[in-house]
Image 1 (spheres, helix red, strand yellow):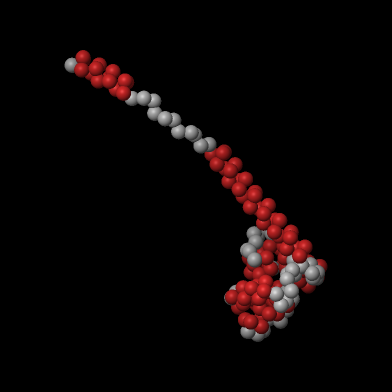
Image 2: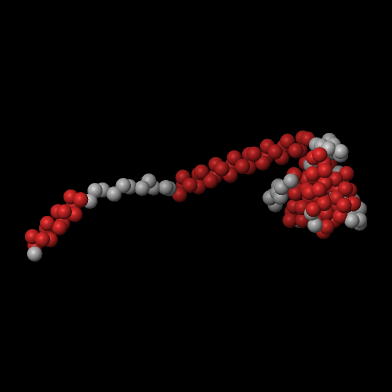
Length: 155
């Protein structure tokens, strides 16, 4: 019996090779790669934002005292629809106010294809969001959705 056990043990050792080791993926490496990807995305968004700030032809919204006061006292969650209309994306709670204060208007002309695309996008927004955006900019709130969208785009 002992002989059979020793022979099976020797057969096991002869036939089994070392298993291939997997590379250890450290948590710090994973976090570092995710951090680099997020930093690149933030840099890209920041570059787009600075380009859009310089593109407008009007005065900054922060230089108009009545609008600046309204932006200051309005909660960031209520400013996000206006930020979406102005910049094409929802901003973070910390950046919405500063971006809206720096907004100078759109870079395109009133009769361009970009204007019609933006107007169609603004007309699709819910009526209460358009009204809130008009209140922030101290514009008249009454009218149909198309009238409010046109008023917002003219401003």
